[in-house]
Amino acid sequence: MIYPKIVNAKTKGEKLFILLIDPDKTSIGQLERTLLLAAKAGVDLILVGSSLLMNNDLDHYIRRIKLQSPVPVVLFPGNAFQLSNEADGILLLSLISGRNPELLIGQHVIAAPFLWQSDLEVMPTGYMLIDGGVPTSVSYISNTTPIPANKKDIALCTAMAGQLMGLRLIYMDAGSGAKHAISPTMISTVSQTIQVPLIVGGGIRTPKQALQAVQAGADAIVVGNALEESPELLLEMVAAVRSLSLSPSAQGVNNSPLEGKEVKGERL
Ligand code: 1GP
Image (cartoon, rainbow, N blue to C red; front, side, top):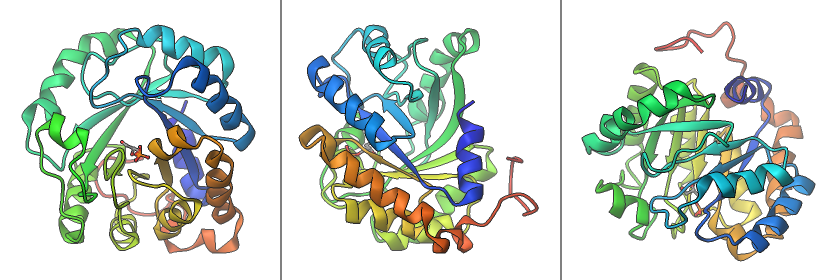
């Protein structure tokens, strides 16, 4: 099971590194090289998906990943077409920063019969778009307005609402290729309050930014774009995230064990 491992890592103050693979942007040749590096670096999870996917053989693509890599593969679907039983799990995304009912419940209804019958581990996720300084595919395709980058109160209340509604993960995303990653101030504001694990991604391009995000309180970071351009960065990125996991300061207030704490909303 993937979700209990995420919660367990949070409880221990261990930070996770998640590699995002967009099948349209990573050819099979690139994929092999990236997976070799991912194994060497010790990537924790692989997300597969995109706002708009032109590759129409997701099953085949994920089988290729699974043949080469033991890392769990989790679907990160832009819509209900991006489903595959070849993966291990799925982030069932509710786009809670937006007001588009299709991405709050519509696509979920369409996907429900497939998910009900599949063995995929379903992880209900509050997905929050944060303005990253450029229009992104996800904001265009989802027809939603991201939360302004400096409105940490809106981000906080949105994340709180997500946890209260029973969502098991909060994923704050500046969108793939964002000019600015989400600010450490916004990350720490949210992470100090919510108790469900916090995933942060979008525009993280350097090991320093990866470290800043986990130092601010992200439990896991997601990197895609920067690694499509320079796969070798993977080793340094993962090392940066691990460096915090190993340091005593990683056991700070943001990472205190969940057990025994009052958890607002659904029990973990
Ligand atoms: C996008 O959070 C992910 O949904 C990753 O973003 O591709 O910019 O790393 P990047």
